[in-house]
Image 1: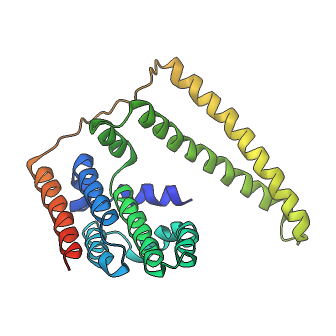
Image 2 (image 1 turned 90 degrees about the vertical axis):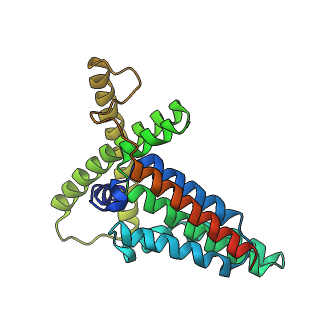
Length: 239
């Protein structure tokens, strides 16, 4: 499961991991805004790609795995890039493809270097709607419920069928039925979790045992990171 791997990455130790989530959010927003407003050319995205690569190395994250996981946005970007190509703007289409990939890599770096509770708490501190943050917290937790049920069902299926080979049609029907059972079991499990949370006095807010601290180093990181993103934007805009 991709979210399990990213969760493991976010628990590592590095200079980037130690920074406050709000500082990393500000830098990521500055980088995304500078990238989005840069001229529509693939060459102008090179400085931003270098900045993200430096961040990945500083966070001690696997570069190749990060590049592969960020590629999940490419099928969608290729569709809109093809539209630009057909419209007679191939350069704009290529720029859209490159920018979307770097943006996805930036967001992945943010998520992979910040534990999910700290990231959502930082978003709320910066003014994100509380309802949106609560929904994200709940959905993220239920992802692990679904993945756990899926692993149990997969193990049970392997034990029952052994090494027998089935046709593709029968395998498709079996997978469709398993998917329906998976969501049914996950729904029942989620209801049980909700009742347990309500019994413990859950009132719509996840509390943290360690309140976040925005240190001087976090302020320097946010200021320098945002300034470098703006500087890169100015350089590519006047090149």
